[in-house]
Image (cartoon, rainbow, N blue to C red; front, top):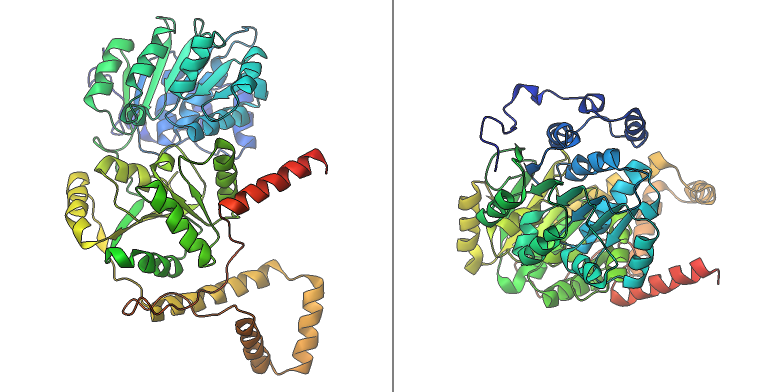
Amino acid sequence: MLADNNDSIGESNSEDAQLEWKQLGLSDGMLDALAGLGFRTPTPVQQKTIPQAMRGCDLLVQAKTGSGKTLAFGLPIIEMLDPEADCVQALVLTPTRELALQVATEIIRTGGMAEKSVVPIFGGASINVQIKKLKAGGKVVVGTPGRILDHISRGTLSLGRARMVVLDEVDEMMDRGFLPDVNHILDMTPSEKQMMVFSATIPDDIRRMILKRMREPQHIQIGEAGYSVNYDVHHSFYRTQRLHKFVTLVNVLHSIPRTKTLIFTNTKSDCERVAEYLHKESFSVGFLDGDLSQSVRQLTLNLFKDGTLDVMVCTDVAARGIDIFGVSHVINYDLPENKEMYLHRTGRTGRAGRKGEAISLVAPNELLQLGDIRKQLGIEIDEVAVPDKDGVSANFKRTMIERLKSMEEEGYADDLSLLADELLEAVEPYALTAGLLTYLRQRGFDLSSGYDVENPEHKIRLFDRAPMLGRQDINQQMSQRREKRSGR
């Protein structure tokens, strides 16, 4: 049964003071590894969870997205593995393949483990490759319920000796209808095992499952009860006509000082349509939806992570479990269907103590729905005036000046520095600057940007950005990478 309130662990306890890694019961080798990776201090969920997990307790952990949950269960798994046991000792179930791959990668990186020891298993990837990895000695399996069951039915995965089972983002697994699959998988594991369940919310069906499956679990809650609102995220909305949403989106993108931006739509068709429009507007953009193959999805995510893309348009397939460093803004092109999905989407920013911005583009018929979300979550969502052409241009000029200053700090290429000296000797500085800007405009790089919101059909050409990326471009990049790996 669930531990009663006197045994639960919450933020109000006196041990909330920041704990060092060395106080959590981790080995010296792990402490050295964490220091080498730059993890200075544990997050609150890691402080609360790791000592209990190391004692072998069953845990029900309620914490917001981006709080450091992967290490909270990943470190105890690494520490408690038996290197001599040739079997699967730990299973981590996730709702999405992206999250499965991310968790597996983090465990390998943090534990300094051979890749063959940690096997990510999910649909959309070669099942034969996964079978080979399992046979090679996988000790930790991280995967999605459907593909895990597939391997169990084929006899290529045995969980009969698994000592640790983690259910990550379990509320999302329930939302996706995975409860029967999860129960079937748990039936294949030993009755005497350690279970750790992580969830942003704990609906009644999850609680009932916990009462059946866990042994007096400790309830660890980080943040306030309920829907775990992330107070590091500022919420705002722009009121706009449905037909003008794209106009509004473009002006908003040009008026915010962003690093990486996620844009959410409710349908796959809108996802690709918005990405295509932004592509035509010279944004460095990719899209992510359920129709893409796993290899293309992963390549697109990697390009977003490394900064090749600075805008990603997604359906809710990406609303969970993808932890991408530096997402400064989440934009709801369409309002999500419910308050839970609103939280999951906006939880992609404001992670690990960083501040984030959540922006919604709201048509008149969506205002009531927005009011319901605001009331149910108890959050403020500020209305902001849609940026006009003048505001966008002013922001562009500020951004240009900031970029030029940052380039100066980083230094210029030697050949360009010499050319600059020659030009300054030949032409007066004001004339040189105006002449270069005129030259850029003549070459198609207009320095005005945005749309006239009062007259949306009057399009102002956007200033140039980084290389564009659409479906065809992604496929071309994949071919180039394959050729490079093969040495051609």
